[in-house]
Image (cartoon, rainbow over all chains, first blue to last red; front, side):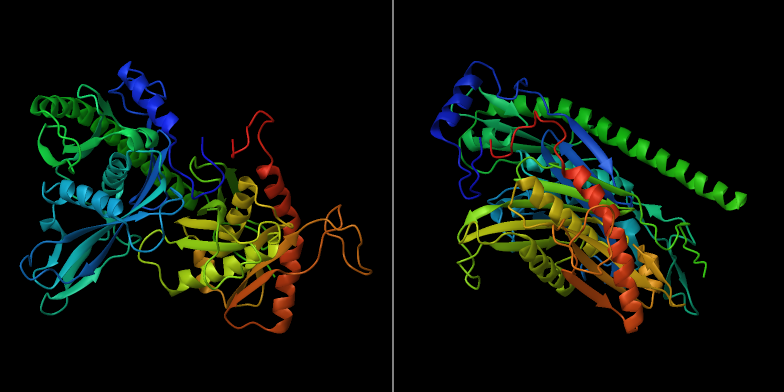
Length: 298
Length: 243
């Protein structure tokens, strides 16, 4: 469907009408049900805290890193969490390098609100020396392939990489107990972050017909839809954030229906993330054992 | 002199190579290239109409965007962009589509030494995947000089940091019909000679540099075989990207 010229990326009127009319007959272009997610696969990289998520054809990579910084003055005992979203030009010909556009900023803010306000990551355990040194966790999200619904994929990638991230252990030493010694990973096993719950984002798309609600819209469906809503909630049913940025008005009963649906989907996705993280941790332990046995046989 | 490399390789041995192409759906061409643990993903869009202000509109221009995995884009990343741009400009046939821009976006997935050669190989494979007209292929390799003046190929990050000096070398990969006299043959087909790009870090003697060139040149045979095998289409049923 796409032309060779990278500038011509708009959908034709025929394609838009086709998507709309087939949705009226409950058919989606890729054959899914209207409330079905695409295939989700979560892979981890060699480093602690790097994850790659593929949701259908959408591909997102996330890296977590940490460094010691001075805390904010009004929160001297808490670490900080910052999210940087990169809409890489490789994901979509319309993404320009340089300053992030408004959709990149919106995506970053949705993920940020889901993690920060709901206190999913325990920031008090990131404090090393009160009012002097705390850990600043930095999440870099790279969008590699835009095939629609970047928010959900990026959120899952951020959660997966946070779950596998390990920060170096540090202890207080010196004469006055004020000197901080950071132990490298070879000396002391690095520690995982304390994560209370996993806030999962679920995105709905609305169309000109009020009864049409679609879950996990693809890139073409996003160009046709007249409104969207992203609900961030965890497996317990706590709503962490709702994002409905203007556009078409939606009835309250539709929103309540979407929230109930989102709860079911969020529980499903949470189990998938936890399973993938468990499998990765087991693999990592097995690899460590192998290395030690090599040492002994030499 | 026996060299003890931490992962048990011989001085001329490369790390295991892995390459896959057409990994992304939106990009016109894409490829991943991994040498051991170093992994790079490259995507190509193009040609797009129009060139930037400083570029020559009579030729096709290449735009390179380098994305590190963490942190902001720094000076080193800008340098890599410039080197990649000049290298790729020399292998593309720029006179075919004048006044167009082809964008090459490189994303670092993991850096374990020899990052720039890995990126050049990935970018070359991605350009082939996108169908951009190329004069010839390019293969890149890293050679480093250790403290006891021996040359090792494809160092890992730890080996790079410990070495006295290292050089990133890019060689052309094309067969020639006329072979100059007294030139050594690499493999079965007569290959073109010459170096496209050479970036060195640290101080090394002239002899060491020439040894690096020789060793690098000898390894390009293996690398280019691997590259050619991997970029061939998997089946004839695969439709072209533009469809």
